[in-house]
Length: 430
Image 1 (cartoon, helix red, strand yellow):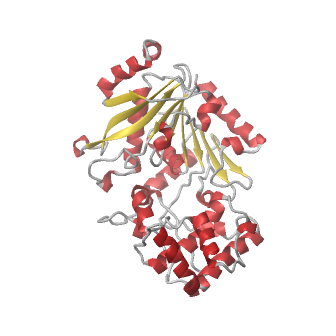
Image 2 (image 1 turned 90 degrees about the horizontal axis):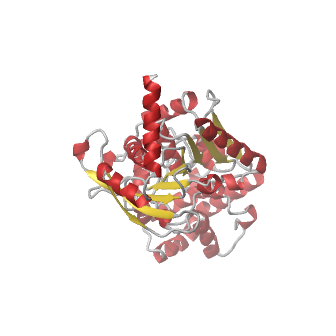
Image 3 (image 1 turned 180 degrees about the vertical axis):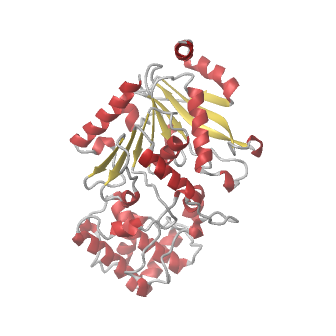
């Protein structure tokens, strides 16, 4: 009886706090105790108020003495009795500051919205980029602190979500703090097990229809086989964009061409008919390559902008490489190239398989109330989560879908299944 009464008292206290006073007053009270600053920003009519918060976070949640950094968080308010959509961004979060930004789930659930910029991205960077503190465990600790703090205002259902690396981040947060949120919706989020997850290679051998696969491969072969003709055009394009390549121009050219098949299927925005197989104008061919892959992708400048991502990929969250078996006679690489070259200066790529193996075991055996959405043709679905032993999760694969798969563009039956499942979980927790 005492336990029941105490629980009821705690719930009542949280509820009373969430109902009393203005949001500005609540944030002011919380900021003193939980080490964050805040300021109001513009919002559209879906939300009534919006704030940007800066949380002081420890660089190492296991060692507070290691230093700290300021983490940017966007809070958009709709109502104290509404759910909270908790967006675990995997990168920077500039977009969340736009007055009209509404996450898909926020709209579907008429929910409040909290978007957290990932540590080491955007404005959420320490004064010194000590890379050893950029771990999934520390990022999960960041999210836990923010959830614990803001639950003082919003004590009802929380739904975490993220797209691609943001969806991975939501997975890792649930693994480390499984009860922080009621449910999770992860969009197109892989679970990789090495820096060269070879499941991607097998996927690209079977994705889509044979005719389109052959066109993609033939396009790559055409460029690599005739490297002497295309490389000068590639160099002109790169120079025009002020791009250089740390591995050298020729290998940078080859890696960009090798990326073409992954990028073509990942985004699904290029038709087979648009592949310029018999195009005599080499400028148009390289322009097409740039449109699908983006010549900046593995350039020195592109890699530098994404150093935090590549560091995580090469140390914990895994990635893919390029299977050169079909192009071996035309490329400089004697074995499948991977992305060790992308590591920040003065760091070493030492991949630890343990974190992702533990996340995999958690999802297959222990996790609950998690929905995963994938696109059938997206190469990242090759390394999708495995739900073999867990019936309390839902995995949806959109037929013909790409990395742009969302609830809103699912077939109606899949959309209904997702929303019915999510609402059932939320209702059962009330």
